[in-house]
Length: 157
Image (cartoon, helix red, strand yellow):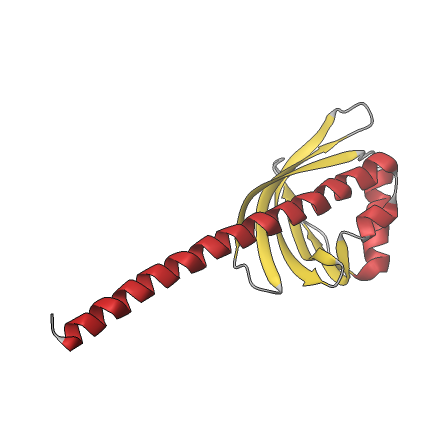
């Protein structure tokens, strides 16, 4: 084997091996991030079960925006609190989230795609839908930064 072919072989081996290590590390990171997001999502649902707006607010960054369907964008903690109170008065007592996938993981952001189901006081289903959340890593952990969601129920015309 010539020096050039030996060097090329070593270079290809290194690129293949180091790329595999990066993929393994990223998968481990995604697992940790998904667990952190699941914890926040669980607390979000429990905010309604307990009637505790602080759990709800702690799920979001202070400058977060909610982007509900058929409604203006709601930004900031006052808007978040108003949204929580409206949903709670409307009978929401739990929300369960199912993460389908995570996209674009960086040191600061990740996007989550999933489905949700809302429940009332007697554990009756109030509705199902889907969401996209842009999460931001903060000093307090992963928090929702942009939260877009809509119902699977067809619009009434």
